[in-house]
Image (cartoon, rainbow, N blue to C red):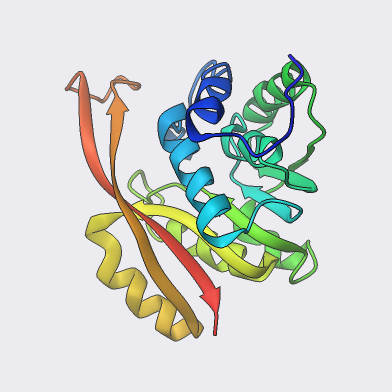
Length: 214
């Protein structure tokens, strides 16, 4: 499916992203949840229209999973997008999506928490990500993703985090000497994806946060 790359309206972008395939078999230890087309489109459109941090910019989609954020960024005119994920199965799905949309994205299999040793600092204008929340034996991994994003970005990092962790993240942002701004409070609906889930779905309050350099 060829996508006409232009200044897409929000609804147009969401409509395209509804055709992005999701995880075949999500892995609980990697906290693999799908970023819905609606949330992905809203996030990207806000970044694009309010901050101009996508069009003609180099963008890294950190922990890209099936690629919905990176694909959306490319649709909005990013000049170069790189999707990075530790999971080869997720990257296989992402690769299929990229091919279906006839887009040009680079994909790298890499552990984001060790990225500082592998990729040169300030390699991208913008980093976007929906990192693990750090709830499944991965405590603190959300902060490692933030650190990796700050290592890669020249301008800003956009990331989703549980609202309940906001105070902790604010403290860490001061430690990292970066400016932190909560752009939106979102309701993230998590479907019953894994056997340990008892409810059909659960809503989690999530912050969309912009980290920028002072």
